[in-house]
Length: 114
Length: 115
Image (cartoon, rainbow over all chains, first blue to last red; front, side, top):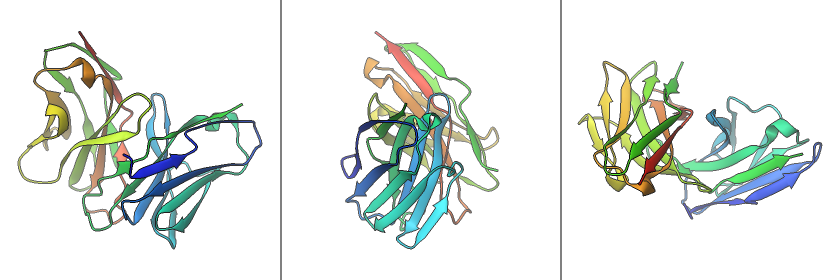
């Protein structure tokens, strides 16, 4: 969905490096999410934010941090990357006004930690 | 606890044949149910959702899904598969009564349609 963008699309880094993945959206949605996808494990929630002042841990938040700089921007940081954080990372958004919570996904960032 | 099970990692079907991708769920209350599709090197795209009402839900690209409350299932179906339907499919559930509104995803099913 072109309304949700992620940068970079691909990144290779080394163990111990700090990495930031960025997500921007033009949908005007309040809620934003970070997931990681691993083969055979589906999508697992890392962090989510219901507005600029609200940040919540998901099921696998250890080793990650986030920043909601504005309604439209939600960044994911790996303070000290490790190889098992190699994965495909997705940002998603949803509209607070929609009780169904349909989520819209960005194209993903493929991160490789050597 | 909320969870989704997609019992088949892979489904193979010949073009023109009907396809079914299975999904069962577990929620403490009543569910909202979703199907998403992921094409190679792309993000997830919304296919369809069940909120309430008719148990048979129609979505994008000719897909439909049937909600079965007694079997806690929400299987994805299409009467006639296309090679272009080959992709990774995810089922997701949300507890209608939850104020958090987060989705729980299954592990995904890789659908391959042979020409």
